[in-house]
Image 1 (cartoon, rainbow, N blue to C red):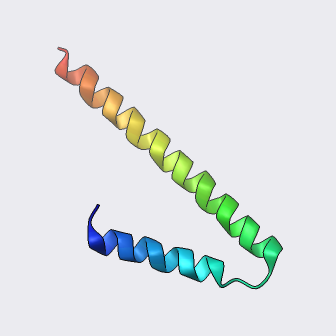
Image 2 (cartoon, rainbow, N blue to C red):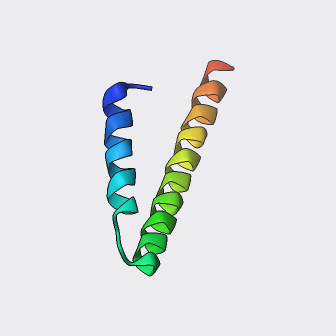
Length: 56
């Protein structure tokens, strides 16, 4: 993984960890999980489309 991206992710995790309110912290983490899951789904879909286009 690119070290620049890793640093950005680490900074985000540190920022979330510093949220004092537990309910807000859980909400933020749930949102991050939801959005990253959607992004992963999109990337997997793009990968399938790319693989299918190579088959022709």
